[in-house]
Image (cartoon, rainbow, N blue to C red; front, side, top):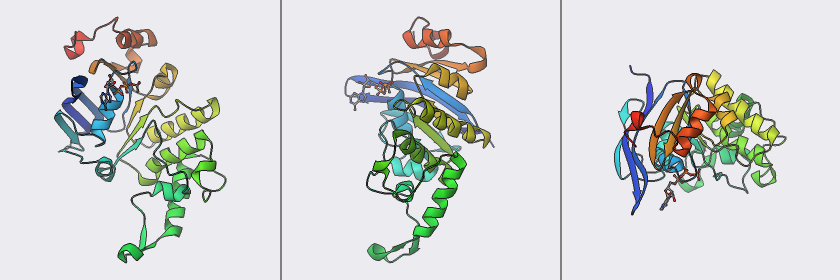
Length: 256
Ligand SMILES: Nc1ncnc2c1ncn2[C@@H]1O[C@H](COP(=O)(O)OP(=O)(O)OP(=O)(O)O)[C@@H](O)[C@H]1O
């Protein structure tokens, strides 16, 4: 069996006249951690929105775990095993940690349609186990999310991945709004995923973080992939040259 987890061929998204993403050919292998870098507006989030079913692509193919897929929406992608931590956290402020983790896929004890009884104890236990995997301390998981710090919230979002043992985790700028300590916590979670052999796509502007955490860097520029670099064979200066267009990447993507 092939060890390619995710593959896109010619993935393209146009918003009217805006060519946000053009012919993206991408592969992610089992256990691999890949960073997506690029300037503001380069097409990184657009790429993620297409592969997570948030939007429908203009054209191109996508394969997940060896099968061609068309996700009708984000829940579809989630059910297939793709867990995404978005830039803007999709957490419900008024709900506690277990309810947020299981939002949209609650454990049911007795299925009586609208009068179903939720397995609250089961959800709490799974939440505690998920958080244990991330080594994040949250004093009381029964408190509503709104009382938590940015870092704790981010860790709750990431703990979803650990709880459901997703097949692929995608993080869009997970530490952009966090302090030093909270950033370190999130980075530790990423390392835990790596040790567990779970693949990751990380969108980040943080060069230090990327070189610390991933195996490979993909650079987007003006809606195209212009570089595919092993971290062992490149450096920050090289990556910046691709981000800014000082190096064109024509040899990689035919994108001069
Ligand atoms: N819904 C939309 N409608 C029209 N244009 C859009 C839409 N979403 C994104 N774009 C445009 O597509 C291009 C790529 O945007 P995208 O958000 O993917 O960039 P990005 O690399 O994620 O940037 P950032 O680092 O700032 O998040 C930009 O020119 C943006 O203005």
